Each structure stands twice: as C-alpha cells, then as structure tokens.
Length: 344
Image (tube, rainbow, N blue to C red):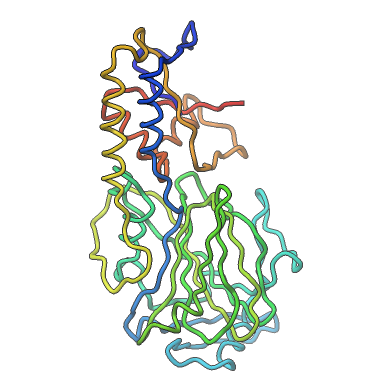
C-alpha cells in the first residue's frame, strides 16, 4: 500500500533519504501500527430453544430421514444418527472441492438439509465480530454471516492445516460455532505470521453454567487446523462472513471471551503520529510516496477476465482488514491518496 501527496501516480524521480530526525518519526509511526490477533473467540450463553437443530434429507436408497436435535440434552446415539445422514467432508483446493481422507476426515451436511434455530444476528455475534476484527471505519460496515455447512467430527476425525477458500471478493472471514456436545480433542489451532493460538471449545463450554455455545471468527488468510477428536462428537456450524452495506447495530449481550478491541484508539494514535510526520518540512520536501506493507491476504478472481475499466486492486481497497484498513483510513482522512501496489 502506498500513499502520496504528489497528486500523481508516476514514480518519484529520485530516492528520498531521511535524516535522523525524520527516521525517528518514521519509527514512531511504525510502532503505532498494532497488529492484534486476527480472530476473536469465546463462549456465548444462549436460550435453551436456540440449541435446537432440525435436519432432513433423502438417502441414496431413497429413504426420507428427518430429525430434531436438542443440543442441551443430546446423546451419542443422537449424534451418530446425524453423522449417518452426512456426506464425507471435502475441502477447497484452488477452484476445486477435493475429497482426501488423509487430509480431512469428517462429515458434512449442506445448508439445504438442516436448519438451526440459533440466529447469529439476534444474539449479538455479528456486532462482536465487527468490533473485534474490523478497525476504524471498517468497524461500521455491514457484515453478513451466510450459513455454509454443518460438520460432524467423530472419534478419529481431524482436518490438517489449511486456509479457507474465499467465496467472493467481499468475503473477509469465517465464523465457526461449536455446539455443546460431550467430546474431547478437536481443538482449533490458528496460525498467522509465525504466531499460533488454540481454541479448545470443549473445555471452554464445559466450564460455563447453563446453555451455551463456543465461537471463533477469523480472517480468511488465517491458517487453521482441527486436531483429532479422541472421544465423542464435535458438531460445528460454519458461516462465511461478507462485507455489505452499513446496517443496523445489535446489542452485544451474553458474551464472554475476547472483548471488543480499541480500534478507534489505535487508528487515532497512528493518525496523530502521521500528522506530526507530515508537518515536518524535512520529510519529503518535494512530495513523494510512503509505503506500508500489508499484513493480510486478499482474494482476486483470476478465473474470469476483469470487466473493462475495472481495477481489481482498487476494488480490494474497499475490502481491507485489520490494521491494513486502519492505515488506509487514517491516510485518506489526512488528505493523502491511497493506492494498492503489487511488489515483486
């Protein structure tokens, strides 16, 4: 990402060499860009009826199978019946769905075959995601959680390290809800830029009194892995997270786990430090460019030709995440032109 106060996009004719005072201010500017973990997780207290799930489909033998599960009181037999109507879970590899039991051993049910009573908007999860993952102006954007899959991980099931396949340029992340069921193992391990975190939903839910679910939301470029389930059944609902037009705000309630971040405070610190740097007459006295390395990965559709006059990189500027979004917004608010550039 580069910002410019020259008003043009032509490359500068000479390389600017910063003096000691300016270098100190540049270092101070870099220190204000705080890279928080690219996920939020925790547990959510729910009403008992929100743990009810309906499912039904026609088997290969032509038999119609329907069921109602109350996760407040499920048994292994109930979950085994659910697993019995599922298909083997595939995973995305490029533009293809691949079945490889050595890489992913689990079951899945497509969204047309089940209906949870849980409403992720009503219980406040979407607001939590907005405030915990998105920074600055992005935190006010509308977010849609689109139900994608139900997965069942029985004893011996796992999913090796992978990244989710983006289902469109406006998709920025995933939400995984872990329904309460007795199981051990199945921890979700998240990795990004050399750091690693683990969310053990089985243990997290077990210590909460009353009906509850586990949840974790993370950006699409976060590598994640489901460790092997050693007993019981781990049942999850996966939602794809998309940007949309700004929408109404729901009240965050009944939540425990990662608190909403201080996105506005971080963006404000960066902006004020950048303003001090720009006010220094020794910094880029003839105008020029200031570059920031982006911290997240973004999807570009290479399967089809871009529309005439459409700049794919410019469109990505509307989908920035985390600290990338905070940097771009602060620069624009100070009157700088922000462009995305590919560095080879």
